[in-house]
Image (tube, rainbow, N blue to C red; front, side, top):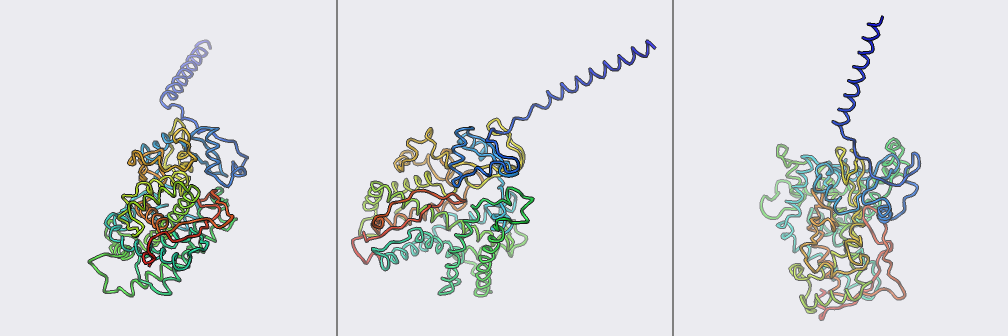
Length: 511
């Protein structure tokens, strides 16, 4: 009996020793996972949803002051992480860019992008790389932009002529001017004059209304995104509305594609300048090519250009003009530069833009104070990652608060003051290509906005032309509202209304 007891005791001691050793080595082999970032408490089930304000970028800035440059909050069942410092942005868009290259795709964006088949919302894969390559090399390369220089000049001169002939001394909704011009430029680059006359104007008119609606829906908080289990109910009707918008645009695309094929069947040029649509149609026929695309991807690329390529640029120009009218001393400096470089007996040409350093600084300052996408497009890590000493779980929604970074008083002197001069010194340091993490209005890394080259040219060209050709004033008694309305694009809360008067020395320059 004593031997049995001793044997049992020995076995027990050995088992306990082995267990202790196993636990100890396991803990040493698997270090403790860093915690989630700090953040505000929400309500059960609802999370922080009931406490969200209309201007989300400002609210996220306030929360960062309390919880730090990286914090979390639950929106419904969705874990969201907000980044508000340049050093942490670098970790995401450069050090771990491959992990954070995918998007968190809301339902509205999924429908808009034909099932995440475009450049903006597609997951990063070989198809996305092919589409981006086509887009950058064929549509927005320096060669392509130089080839379409005359087209942009024609559209700018059309709007100058229109304002002079029909709107002098009358209030104008200013934002309509760059929107219409940018839409015409984009459409002509995409499919040229394949549909002209009244039918072409009707298509552009239909596009204007639906583009505005699409942008609104893309920025509208949707319960279905926060509670995927309830998505089938479409409680707010966002899915239904976006499907209706996309169907409208899809009919336009089908009409244009059919007309293009009908007119050019058997005659498609192999030499000379091709419209972007022609290039896409040719790639669609090359099934064995690594750069081949499907018809769905073709339409998704067109959607990116027509919607994103139009609204964001027009919005930036409207903000820039509002700032100039709100800061007359800046307007005076800009017009003096234009008078010196171009002259009041001449019209703006695109070749003048490289000499207009102060105007370039105005555009950069506008994008600093009023970034088109203040939270960029949310990212979605493909695996759990550690950023700033905290764990960001796989499939969480990651916001980069560009608005907060670009108005941070520890980075910028008097950040809320509109001061273009801050961009005149060391201009290369402040390019728009996301190389400086203190300033990234178009994003950074592999998912930087591919439409940047066209947006940069058109913003400067249009603004320069309008303030060189006309003097502008507010209607009598009106005050300038500089507040913005948050969405996927940050628009002015109140559209800018202004009255033009001629500035050039000869009325023939407006013809």
